[in-house]
Amino acid sequence: MTTSTDIKHNWHVYGHDWAVDFLQKGLRNKRTRHAYLITGTRSVGKMRLAQTFAMALNCQHDDEANRPCYQCRACKSLMSGNNPDLIYAQPDESGRLKIDAVRNVTRMLALKPYASRYRIAIFDGFDNASPQSQDALLKTLEEPASYAVLILLAESTDRILSTITSRSQVVPLRPVPLHVIKEQLMLLGTEEPRADLIARLSSGRIGWALSSLENEDELLYRSDMLDMLRDIIAGNRVERMKISDQISRKMGRDKPQLQYVLEIWQTYWRDVLLESYGNPVKPCNSDRKDEIIRLVSTIDSEQAYQAMDATRTALKSLSTNANVRLVLDVLFLSYPGLI
Image (cartoon, rainbow, N blue to C red; front, side, top):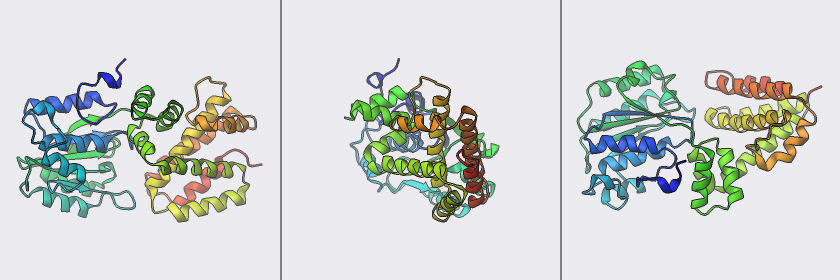
């Protein structure tokens, strides 16, 4: 079993050693591609890998094996967020990467590097870009400048044009094993019970785990959302519709945030389903075990499965142009507890 102590690279990227090794080999062998497509679930570590790779590309250390060095001017400017040769294309409030944002970045990418070896552009949420927005990048991919490197981040390649994927080096990131996340958190000084809880809640998303460790609000928010789910289950039709209205008003324009909430609820229903079958696996939401046991005493395994499946269906619906309020209404009426 590979542990953190077995890591032989100096990249501050955890749980994705094969990807680091792959990118390092390309650097050592002078085989840098003009476009990389890093895929994986949200918060699995795509952005950290992209930023560290960008740092390695422009690191000024004499020994390539020690890039990034985190000490040279190029590395420090990137870590501080003040590197003029690293450009970001970010999705808007709706989670969409608009064509204007893509065009703006490609124009900046065409300029020669200000003070670095490469001019690098990172496109976050590229799978949420429309076909027209993706097409706007095609010319840059077909005729890239020798100093330009594009790094596209996406949850999967399903909604990305084949003309884009065929011109990119795909680097698929998988969920990080629980024991690796837990070990890394403990190496950072986290006590074992807390490290175990965060690792289980992360569902293999090392980025989420590290963020939760640094930001207490992440876990508090997750607790608030589970309290809301408890209120939904306990409520009647009128009360459920009231909560649906409140959520749609607050998060209706922020689908990524609402999807995050449903992902939290999905882990909860998975725990309920496993408990209903008497599965000995420790629940993901281990701090809610007593609450889960009480719920299982009032519903059966079929109802637990239907609730989990309804949550999964709602998640898929939010990736389309479906009406948020309608999606939530249907979801809440599907949850057990109504007479």
